[in-house]
Image (cartoon, rainbow, N blue to C red; front, side, top):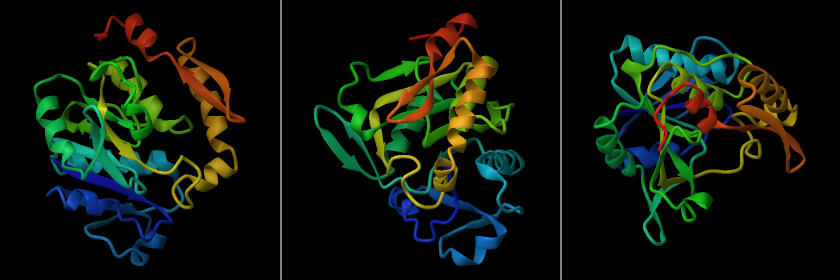
Length: 241
């Protein structure tokens, strides 16, 4: 297991330190114009600038395939902690992913995720299968993934739909958690896209693509896509649990 971190405009990212503390190797995927500005381990030049998150995600997938990796964590560059809820919220490093990997190896699912810290405590079940989308920090069974991220949609959520459509689907461990700033509030990454409301345009395109299993809603003054992951999986006769 190895962790891939795409990073843009966050030269002081420390997310990799969480993984290093757990003995997990990290590779950083960086645009050519910023490559020399980063002082982080294992830098990979993604060859083009300003191509968007879809480009770098597919670059990472193809890099993993070419280098014969099995299991890879894709993690955003502003995750600041991990942990577990076991009656109380306990902070840990990225060592939780060793436990998650051992559980996932026994199961057929291609895409595995965990919860936001603020939601882990109130989940009634320890896991969900093809009921919820996963994002920010996910574990991917690379050799089973034959599909890519699609340009112009909300990438993490689109990838969940495609994983359900093309594979066994999405497993979410509800009581493992990560913490990070609210999306679009932390400079770098997707900050400019959210500032320009490109995310809202992506939500509209996502809904058009996966209707009736996605619809537009207003959330805190922004247009967002609400997903019916369970309904989509049911329509395809996939496992739901």
